[in-house]
Image 1 (cartoon, one colour):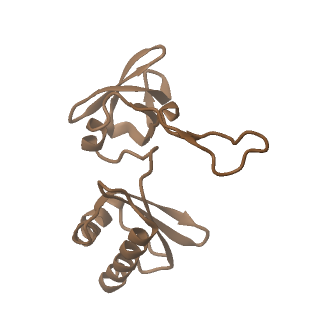
Image 2 (cartoon, rainbow, N blue to C red):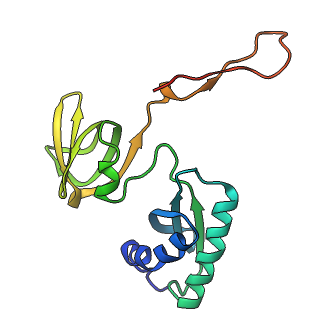
Length: 177
C-alpha cells in the first residue's frame, strides 16, 4: 500500500478548492480506517456549517484527489465542522482562543507531563502558555501532538425537561456570555 502524503502537503493542495467554495479549511487529520486510509477535513464558515456544505466540499475534494492522484489506494474521506471542541492545528488558531480551556497531548514530556489541560494564557510563534491547577506551563508547538478546545458547557443553552404531564415543547434557558 502506498503511503499517504503528509497532512501539510494535502492541506496546501486542497485549500484552494475549499476556499473556492467559500469555506475555510480549518485542518486535516489523516490515519487509517480498517484497510483503507482515512482523510478527515474540518471546514469552517462564520455562519456555521451544514450537512449540505460538507457534502458539497466532499464531492469537490474527492474529484480533486482523483484527478491529481493525491491518494492512489483505497481511502475514506470525511468532511465536517470543527465543532465547539475543535482541534487546534496552527499557532494562529491557538491565538484566536486565548482565555479558553485547552486539552493538549504532547509527543514528548514537558515539565514531566505528556498531557496538559488548562486555560490558554498566551501564544507566540513557537509556544503556548497554559495555566493548569498546579501552575503555568509553556508548551513548544514542536512537541504538540494534538490539541483541542475544552468548551465551557455551562455557557451553552440546555433544554429544560418538561414537567410531568406538561404538553408542548420544552423551553430553553439561554445564558449570555
